[in-house]
Length: 337
Image 1 (cartoon, rainbow, N blue to C red):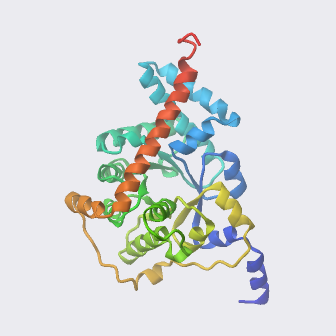
Image 2 (cartoon, rainbow, N blue to C red):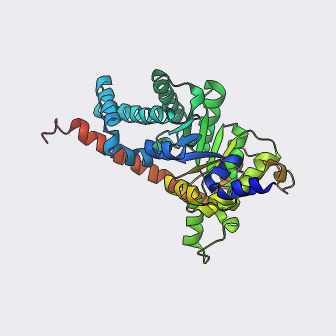
């Protein structure tokens, strides 16, 4: 490397260096953050949409979604459901105006154990995207990585050509099942794995490469690359930039605006820790999981069982909060308020 190349690399932010090895995704529903950090893709979830929907800047989208729900009619519950689906798609369509890649839109977490309901809701979201002029290739449908969610993903990919992002992924069993289902992308969580270990073991801090969340994603990445799976590995849920830097080289990483800002200010030198070539020398062996084997192997991982159920409950709680916000605004006049 020449001295001028070295000087340029030293001046480059870690974020810019990371983009040379990994596709950077913004984990936010805030358009301003997306414009600032220029990610390839963006991910949303009920918690992020709930927060954004309460910001003054996005009230036009909320009003449009509520008007849509009322126009379709039906029971109050049906109107709210239709308004929320529309709101998710309106946010997604706006985000797509600001990024070159794809947006992830999440199916209601309360459907996480009902394969057919997840497929139906996903197809409904895709129909709304089509109405908004957005093609299938620009959307990832997010599903919880339950057995039912993984099988919904398999059906959506194979029968409907809908690309899926399997989220709330904490165990190796979940990752293997997703690979075998042939889904487009998985979101293994890093920070929430760290949270569990800090809360439930005697060790309260970890060096980045020893972080249990980092080690989990590294194992999954190496397994996928060693055995030629096409499913994209997108590390998610980061607690600090050390975790992000430790996973440089991973296919995709979805990062919050706060950490993107820190990476932009950091001018240290970054080298990739993960590569498809290095994965070939890992000692991992190929595994096949049917439903019974999946449930057993996943159940053997206490952390993954607890964090998956906790994650579903939290997303469901935020979905209910969003319903309450829209119910209050759509029907308060009828209640004499």
